[in-house]
Length: 63
Image (cartoon, rainbow, N blue to C red):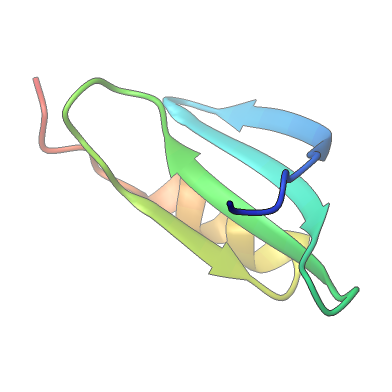
């Protein structure tokens, strides 16, 4: 069973939501996830600045 991830400091930029969490090794990670249906784009980053940049430049192909 996968570990439960608790997100902190959530923010939304366009259709992309950014959240901060701790991975299994205790490191702080930031993730950016597109909230549009059928898009499926997501990525993990080591800083919130990188996640915000990716969220701002994400162009969802789903109309």
